[in-house]
Image (cartoon, rainbow, N blue to C red):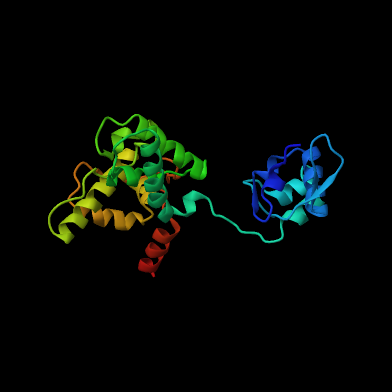
Length: 258
């Protein structure tokens, strides 16, 4: 009879991906294998010992599933001996360029494409995306972009899916001295954020992760045109009716009166 995966992996490792998706009947069978360290081949009643290391992965919260009764508690304690938490891709932005370059090489070879790298604009768009699908979504974006690329030796913003094109920096690295390049980069970054939020400074500042006051200074220092004072409000902020003073304004008036 044919040997199964656990027997084939004798002395090695079995990786079970998305173990949280296993239906309860299969969970019971897996528990028996892990508990007894033996398997029975399909159509046989003879037990065969196994010697494997089992690594499991899941994107689900197994503890919550145990409480809801959708994952066996006894199996949970068998597989959760050593736990390693892997943060989502959005919390590991420094890994995005490395993974993107790796996937580019893999898919360039698979699709017989001559691509040597990614432009700064392409990488900036990847860095700003939230990646709800984690690494698999990044893998999909790189392959889609590569397949639809127009023949250049670097993937650029125009090769990205439409949903990732909204927030990018220039395709090319700015020229000139170091300080001139940094100034150009900051200017384009601020302009992109303002353009993305239709000139609203408060939302642009939140997008950039800086204070609104600092954004004001950058707009003035970098000579960014087309920014109006009225763009500084947030439509979700409550506005005071005309003639109504804030507490700080009334306090200053009382101090002057005394």
